Amino acid sequence: MTQTVTTIALTSGQRFRRWLEMLVLFLGLPLAMAGVIYKGHVPLFTALMPVLGLMVILMLADRSFSMRKALNRGFGRRELLMILGMFVVLGGGLAYWVYAQDPARFLSLPLARPRLWLFVMLAYPIISVVTQEIIYRVFFFHRYRQLFEARPSLGILVNAALFSFGHIFFWNWPSIILTFFGGAIFAWRYLRTNSFWAVALEHALYGNLVFTVGLGGYFFTGVSNFR
Image 1: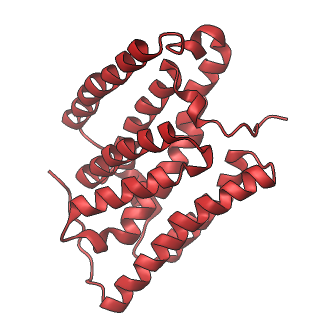
Image 2 (image 1 turned 180 degrees about the horizontal axis):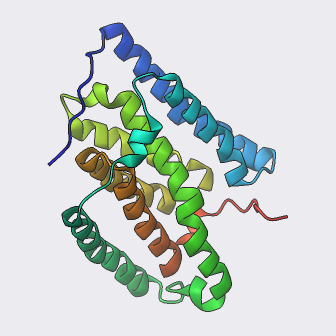
């Protein structure tokens, strides 16, 4: 069952300002990051840190928000089984599709560069997943949940679209498509559980799968974090 959060209704002016703020942050910042990465040759995670810092500042400036409470919300065994069950079905389908469509790509990273693959498996959930989920689920739904109280499905759609747009600096359609569907799953999960840890686990599973089955090449900018 989706958890609800009691809030004070926004005025029409406040709703307009929230929508405008959302578009500036979640459309403008990815475009700015693209310029910083490719024109300034700044590695992705380096460029991402100021964005994360800005989001954290905005959250902490909101007296109704508590990072401690946001990170203290867990999830139960039933939810864990649902996450794993969906991953087996959807992740298995994605893995089979890659194998059937491009067998040379399938498992290319773990077979050709096992040490890099192991590093990605360990570092991606800690560095990338945590950052993305704080920004796109914890911050987004704390700040803008009231805009979608009457239509939660619209909130999921908008969040997925913005999450997908947030990967525009990879400049390829597979990354946009994969992150849209992934974003829809993660947004639905967060609205259902209100748990950062549930959605972070789910994100880590699918993200690591993408790099394992051979689709990780769509999620590199070419600007190295290691010089």
